[in-house]
Image (cartoon, rainbow, N blue to C red; front, side):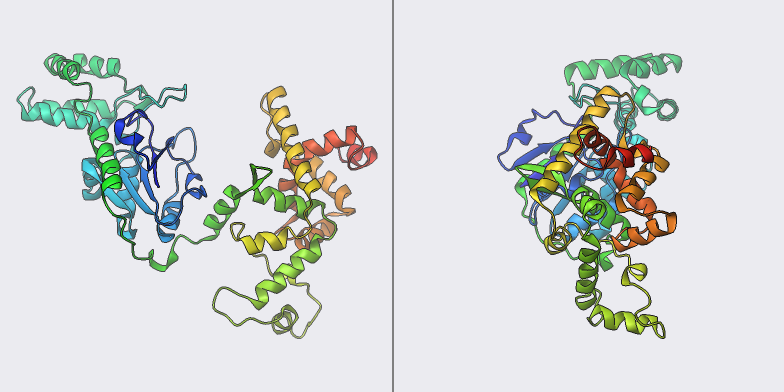
Length: 425
């Protein structure tokens, strides 16, 4: 399968994109490469990406899919930029824009940035600087304008913020710099060929054609697995989902629900720590957790609980880990998570500006104390550690995603007593 992330650079009706093996997707953003539909042996063609309206795709996300045996081709826009940055790690770059970045002739992301239509059509509303650079080079070569004048006009175009670099703005700058002949020539060439000077489009078509016509040869492993960091693990966990009743549900949310609401979760967490102790994945010898604790805590053997020393970040894309952490999960738990998510959605629609993350820390903290029957901050921190949270602040942050649902349940007598939640407020 070929997964093409494209927006304004190519119209989604482009004939090459209608090939049977091509899956056309919107511009790539942070998290898109965690899509379970992208499998070993597939090809990702990265052309367009988001980096203004949403977080851009991280380099380590690309390194991770390369390590899984996915070919990644970049061209034209952010794809060319990322390919130049990661070519040494196995990402394939295609086209003139990529080669210019690789040589160092281009170094700014504003060279390829464009303003996009806000209606979801991804149509470009502005000219990317790299295309203007290209047409100015053609104009200078063909004697339409002197090279020095072309360089001055390019500097003027570069001084315009990319979302404002519309065709009227380009023409206005031409008039201001007495480049009317160039403006008339450009409009004439564009009338004859609407794609004249569109080097980004040419590169994007080349990248898709390469994906369709070439064989995917396995890449060498990414050196030293440099993508596998704590940051990457947290990103991967954030985007991990599993189907529940045919609909994807965030695995991290399901685990957090068990951490917060299952009275027996401390035992689940201890069992998982014990499993890690006996089956470490860092090459060290495995041993029972009590024995490992005895080595680490002598002469205080048995006095320090394991959860106070070890705070591993689980891999929520590992089925075995997920099965262990959700050992007590029931169908009713999953239904409650879905109901609480619906409560958040309702609040977003009916309360402008609502988001769970913005709920008051003190209110949520008091609700957590009621939930865990912890009279003070120290007891709350101890209970949080026993349930796998680094601190009680992390538990409070997770509880915010369920708090609106808890308040809804309070009204219907499904959860904590009214007195407890009223006190928490």
